[in-house]
Length: 277
Ligand code: SAH
Image (cartoon, rainbow, N blue to C red):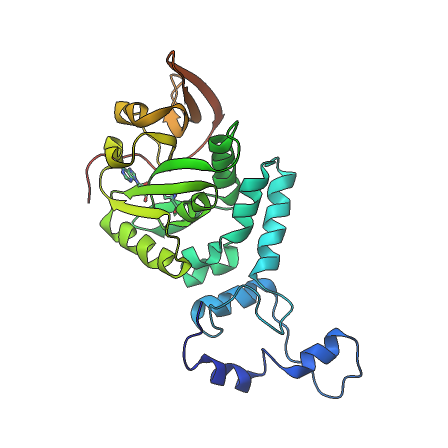
């Protein structure tokens, strides 16, 4: 990703980045001048997001602390919490979550918390994203084929999915978020992510059949269109209201004989709504 013009000038005057002194300090050489103020990882991310530091590479030279390190810590935590699939951990380590949230929330981007993304919607906790993507990948060797995501939101999960699947079709019913996701994803140049503005309750027949369908919004039932558009052998992961009246993760496997349904843990997703707005 290219640096924004103008920033290097600002940066060198602040002395916060790229100073040759940093190298000397790093190798323990005698220090003759005051070291540049070190930023902790959250400060670093906040500065990147607010434009004080360039939102450039994930390894910001000279600082020693960068978003790669913060993500690595998040990935270790995900592994401790039980996420095992190396494909998923790798994808979670690659996608820069802090680029998908508002500047004011950047400090929390790698914490295990859901965050508002505008228009009353939220980006799920990293742990929930990883869990759902892991369920989607379960029993599939290597890369998944075509995936349908319902609820693009800010585009974060679509970016994660782009690392584990050959093609990602992601549909969003709120135009404002569809456009925000487009803006957020543009710099990543993920050519296998296709953003669609529309009602995801109808699925997206053009990409069907799907190796996997994943919903980021919870409905009373799984729409028939999703079941129809799932390939035989494909898996569908969706928060759904159970007969007991609460929302839980539901996994549906489509087989040649029919559908196998599993109800897993309770979750709290924003509602699946019909139509566009
Ligand atoms: N995966 C997203 C999470 C977004 S929250 C992310 O990484 O940010 C869930 C999203 O589902 C919301 O943006 C909401 O507008 C959307 N949604 C709800 N019902 C929908 C429908 N019928 N079709 C498409 N999107 C829907």
